[in-house]
Image (cartoon, rainbow, N blue to C red; front, side, top):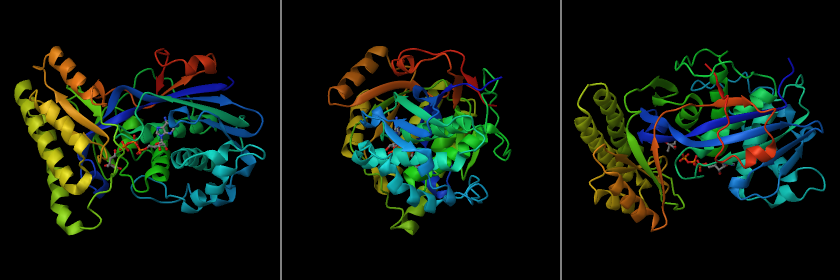
Length: 414
Ligand SMILES: Nc1ncnc2c1ncn2[C@@H]1O[C@H](COP(=O)(O)OP(=O)(O)OP(=O)(O)O)[C@@H](O)[C@H]1O
Ligand SMILES: C[C@@](O)(CCO)CC(=O)[O-]
């Protein structure tokens, strides 16, 4: 059977319930995939030896273009054999350095690439970093065009970079013949991180590399959630399913504030260590409570206490912001509890919507928040991680106008 000439891939955003920042220092965090907030990519076959990347969500109206022959293949020899104990590969700084001028050069005569800003350069570097590593001379694709769409806010704490990284890793692994579209319509939720032959693990490892291009030293929780989906407890690259809170409803508020996500940890490691441990205690308490069989009312009340505790602790690491305080103030008027989520310093705020909150109140809260320029999403946690589709029958136009179209027939890796 011939391989598809187009692939569609889709990965969810994530929300961190407890443990952001602390997880970077090896503490346990709890997070889940976002229902309905996803990034999608269409990979189209080319036969002219070029790579094309379209990034409209980053404000780039024209395509970026590179000849495959310009990639610095001489820098990749050691990558796949490297040994990064946390997730499987070592990061190739030398390759990233070599890609910097190439990102801007593009093909001769194409000035487009030179006009791109720093965020766009990072997104392009991720693409070329993965492609250079994964290119397989056996592939029947002599180039690819990538289109990206997303309903996730970028740079707001909901894991848009992880969804981007997971989609790119998956699409390129498919295009370059390392993995194939699976047969499964539904995912069996089992993690076996040590099984290096599992396509899901391969995707997660390469997405982690991509996250390193964007973030430097990420914990790996965001790419893990975007890859595996569902709700997880995560520490030091090790993950467990957490069940029992997929029924909870949340309001996410994007304060749209430029973020300052730098914490005090690097400057005061000894002072903040007890704070990081206390944050880990919150994740542990959450896991205990969620499995304890307490009534829904008691469960909600305890989660709200943990939300406040976590917010105040992470706030003391220096990633609070007046816009986050504003959301907490408005939701508190309706007796609801909120915390920053993700890297903080602006960005998104998570509010637990208890069962007893009326739809009228939710509407009023949303109105109060949107009237001061914030953006709200009502969501549940859980749902599929990376999903793929043979898109041979889907045109580029259909894909680009697909915001409200649900493509059917998605497949999932087990
Ligand atoms: N739709 C997209 N198109 C292109 N690049 C994207 C897209 N979404 C995310 N990115 C890449 O991810 C970067 C944003 O990552 P950043 O970590 O700042 O935000 P986030 O992932 O939304 O937040 P957090 O990591 O706190 O959850 C962008 O600068 C870009 O490089
Ligand atoms: C702030 C942080 O903990 C979460 C970002 O979504 C960073 C990370 O885990 O890599």
